[in-house]
Length: 470
View 1 (cartoon, rainbow, N blue to C red):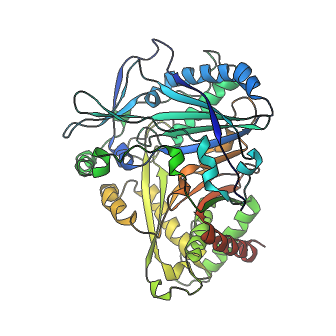
View 2 (tube, rainbow, N blue to C red):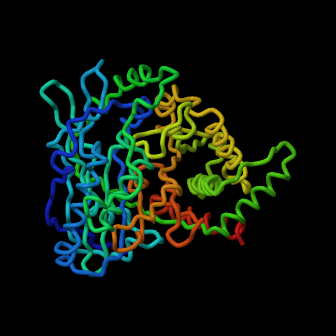
View 3 (cartoon, rainbow, N blue to C red):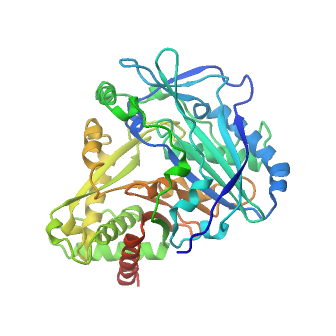
């Protein structure tokens, strides 16, 4: 792969606040469902748009509306402009917004590289995306010994006469995927409608975190866990995001069309019916997609010498489920915070390298999905201990995103997004799953691997599609 210079020139950094006087000083307590995300690195998602205009045209004609609409949207989503406050134990962490708080909005201009390569599906050098990603502001110590951690940052990059990239970075403790996409689409809606103060469309976010009932007394358990989490209280030295770009790693986008997904369901169902011990399978698009990718990933870790001695090794697959309508006292879909259940399934490596690995995986994932629905938050008290165990394992694969978030419906006024990427699949054993850009009912999978493993994965993936979807 030819080495191309992808760079960006800084134009300006703006500080965007809600309109003056619109939001008073507000302290938001965290719910027990927020605490697990305090140990999570910042989330970063990029949106790419076609924009065949000059930088001057963008700055003069588009940016004022975009900036004004951001301010108006932050009036309703003010926790993003605030800080996560970590007071010394035994005091509880919380989110604090004050009228002098703001969101850093960095504007840059691309000075190298090809926009069309960035929005392609084929494997691309992962480091090429990092010049277009904002740095999160550094945390700081307050006079009372508390640590203040900024919650949000944005970078907009103009690719002259080609396109735009809008990248958001946020602390997961503030918002889950549903909540952050509610903000993004609200900001886009105000921008699309000209940035007028009365142009907010859709329902307002709900900030009542007290609505989440801690019926199992998990808050005290989680706070105790956090008090001993060293990286939280002794953060690593600050490192710009550009210096975190991976080496020898590529990212690709896999696409499953709706007909392909239906064929996968049919094949898995038929194979399952041949199993005398099998009961009817739950087969959603999400389940068959994750099952196929998981099996291909594990197979791609096999060397040519075949590490057969490792066949009894357990492999783990983690995914999330929205619980807003599943908890005992259901929350509105507009709840702004975290309301997620965490599920992990395990299979032996030998089961995942078989021809019918997709069936084995679908059974395991489908069973866990049913548990989400029948008994949400069933093992929540074990989340921290499970994370300590699984996160050290190279065979722990996790899912980021969901097709239900409809990332490609994001439209600021110059058309739907042409591409959406989740950055952290580059630096973890994660894959992103989202709706298809080109087809209703299709699914896109984002994947980042080292070059040699990506070559093996793509060969396995293509063979599986040929065998299962032809």
